[in-house]
Length: 498
Image 1 (tube, rainbow, N blue to C red):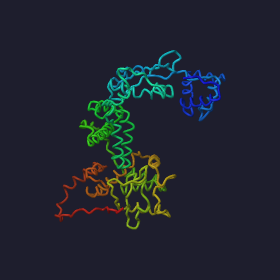
Image 2 (cartoon, helix red, strand yellow; image 1 turned 180 degrees about the horizontal axis):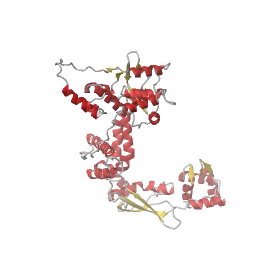
Image 3 (cartoon, rainbow, N blue to C red; image 1 turned 30 degrees about the vertical axis):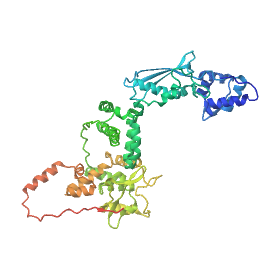
Image 4 (tube, rainbow, N blue to C red; image 1 turned 45 degrees about the horizontal axis):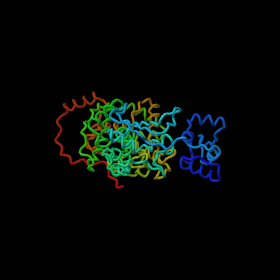
């Protein structure tokens, strides 16, 4: 690179040089590399006043092209590095992970990070799945980018006006190499490619909660481990090894959930004929969860007493204990859904952070209203608009999930009752109906469950001794007269046309 003369065109020449080598706004590391100094030496020059001070933007010192033109013209300073050329590439198994390849690249220029006269050496780890040979190809293709990360603007000798001398026996080897087919590993689809396709064509059409679960598991677990790996290299052994790593940090159910999502992406690849088969992985055995006991009569009395005079607390307790509503169904409830004339509550929506969505089962139903629940709703109705939510938030149309949860926790602490979540109220609702003699069919309808087996998980015995005595007492009862065969039980719920 020629020096800069102090002629009339020297300023324009210096400006063109800066525009070609530096971005519009450059910081200390870039300026130090451009002038062949270390960042520390550049800061010392600033303190001595022998280097332009530049300007401060957002708390960081930087320079524009205009700030440096005068220095180049006055002192004829120029970058100390010649244009760099990749001269050697070595590959070996990575020390931290022998299954991956470490690439060692040597350039024919001085290392700007070192004060000693050492050649520039850059070490990188190739993406998962690359062999020793394909890693060399990967290093050659990305050498310019790695070099730019160290010295700012690329200094490779393929710049305009310069050509690499070619041996006579092999004229123009560079175009020939570009025309050759790339290694198979570089063409293989990675798991990240398949997830992008699946997200655009499948996941985006699912429920908001399902989409959130997919994104969370992908970004937190699958992408860091398998994102850049070709799908053909994701074998059963690697999946099992990864599951062993997960078991050290997560519960068995969480591990099953993550592996199921990984298999879902691979199944999509099989469906698109990008993969032969999905590795079969058995599920981990999940320890039986502790039974969620319903509230006792004393606990319900304490909770309702603590909520006396508290509109939000009373309505939340009664909607859970007397109607079996879920937390997000309560948050989505509006006054137009409360039919005081027909003593019904229309459950149409469920609240989500992105807005209202369909309820579980995707059916809107009308739940009969108990007398004490109706009395509290009449008291709270007042002059509210039909479009207002029953549980209004301070900044949004409805309370947030965290605000609602914290509100009920504080109420339970005031009552001296352990708070075990909103679903415990639904367990209590089903158990109370069971104690009153409701049949399984009635319980399933009121719980709004698709399968009766789900409802059975909500049926508890609060007083085992009393239940046993009642069962034995039936043996001493006289034989009742044969009753007519009852017809099918009619649903106590009414389907609402949305």
